[in-house]
Amino acid sequence: MPLPDSIPQLLAAGWDRVDPDRAGWTYVSFQVLTIAAGTSVTLEANHQERALVPLAGRVHAQAAGENGDADEQREWEFGGRENVFAGLGWCLYLPFQTAVTLTALTEVELAVAEAPATARFAPVLVTPEDTKIELRGGGNASRQVNSLMLPDFPADRLHIIEVWTPGGNWSSFPPHKHEHDQVTDLGAEAELEETYYYRLRDPENGWAVQRVYSSERDFDLTVSVRDGDILLIPWGYHTTAAIHGHDLYYLNVLAGPAPRRTLQAFQDPCLRPTQDAWPDLGLDSRLPIVPRHPGEPLGAEGN
Image (cartoon, rainbow, N blue to C red):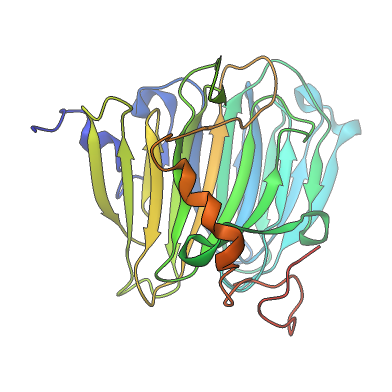
């Protein structure tokens, strides 16, 4: 079938920033900043809450209080991994109306996620020790998940999750969607916009495959994604495959209009039964790809 004209907008290859105007949606903004060692970047106060995730390097953040109040100024140093395959992520959450100056202590790649907020929460620094390593799935649908901002996190709309998938495995499987706030006989679903930001262990030669399709199957997109690509998920079932021999990382940013914080997703009923075999298949022995501490044996589940 002919593909809709809107398809190229979903794969934001080469984009330096995603925002509602450019994406044609309402909530999620995303960009990756590269900051040279010893230099600084200031993000001005606005009506967006922010999550800052160093992909590589270590950064110093100095944030003013609400409306620039110097008396409420706070500082943090965070990050430090060489790349996304060398350590678990850190995440600094900042509420809306918070200006922040970021100074690179080493060269830094910093993911910046934003969403409009109406409630103000306290800043929170999430460290690798604060998170739980989850090994999900089974067989060649096994992957590692590090949840930096889950629904119980004290924020308004933002949710942040990082995922590692061994080469040859499927991730975000069974395919699922989160395009409506609804409860059906088959389960609940929340309306959420989402970005996928991909990194490959071998950025020169590696790639992965992303599929997005509608419930009615009148929309079906399958694309190859490469290191540094961004994909927009405004609707539709979606799933990802890491090609053989090439480990994949992606950072998910989600936000939506729901009055409650939730990540409820609706799985494709046609493929949901594939989960039944996972207990017998067991987890991929290559997991975790990124242990909590250097030297931790592979295959040891985090706590």
